[in-house]
Length: 142
Image (cartoon, rainbow, N blue to C red; front, side, top):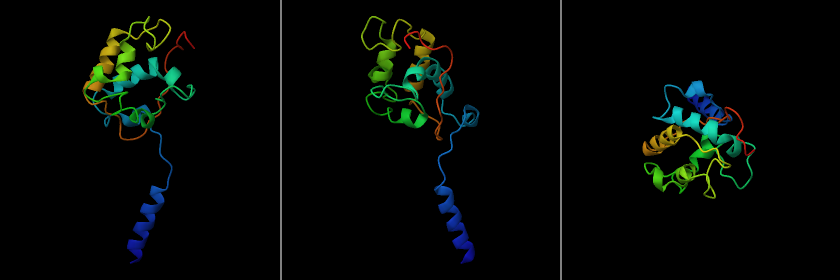
C-alpha cells in the first residue's frame, strides 16, 4: 500500500511541474518531418514581428504551442498550403496589401517551398513546447 501511495504521489507531483521549454537541440531526433527547415524560415522571417513583442492584432508564433493554435484553423491547413492563409500571405507580391513579410522584403522562393513542404507534410510540430527565437537582422519595416 505504501509503495502504491508513493507512486501516486510521485505522479501527482510531477504533473504539477511547470512546462519545460526545450531548446532546438532537444527536439532533434524526435522532430517531425520538415520542421527543422520550417523553423529556420519562421525564425528568420516571421518571429521578429509575430514573436513576444508583437502587436496584439498579430497572430502569435512565439512558441510551438501558439503556432499549434493556428494549425487546423484557416491559418494553416495541414496538407493544403494554398488553402492556408499563412501560406497565401507569404506568397503575395509585395504590392498586395497584407503581403508578409511587409515592406518589400518578401521571403525567397526557396523559403516559400520549405513552408509549402512543411504544410504539405501535415504542418507537424515537436511534441514538446519550444520557444521560437528571432534569427538574423531585423526586417526593414520594424
